[in-house]
Length: 218
Image 1: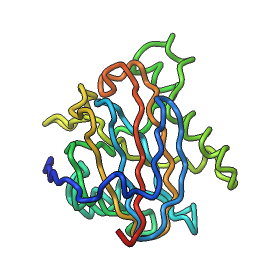
Image 2: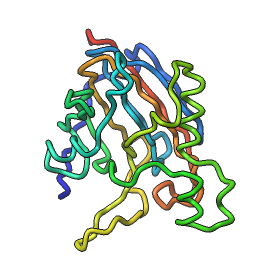
Image 3: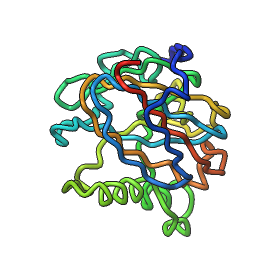
Image 4: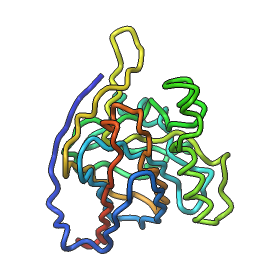
């Protein structure tokens, strides 16, 4: 099922509390307080932004793709989607979306999956699971490989065929498209700005993204 709910935001970038640029292939880890808004901007278009969310007070309670899909009755995420945790709590709500396609079925790329999907010779190439681990090591709060769970691939185009197969297709995003979320509780956001050179969703050209965060009182 694919229902697109495009909605621009009224929040102005110049009023943001924080602004970061995450280069292609880099991780990014940041806590977002309850009530704050976070916007992920696809600066050049066709970038896949692999993201995991955690309850900031209990990292064992983290984003659940299964519960989110079941409760909203849609395999794609867009404006109005509530992102549920493994404990059934609402972590964040998508409040604006100007792209319309965000995957949460395909998972994050790994060196092993890259060898299967692309070529054995691609095994040495960097992958999102490596970036997640790098970010968690930098965060230094005792999280490791066991904490890498289901994720969202913002801006990534992974349609499901009528016979139930996943396909990785050319990206549908464009420069300055964005998705914006409101934190419904204190959350930890861990991003791998996908380094995958072999992914058509990335246009075979990973590019930077921007993270904007507004305070709860905007």
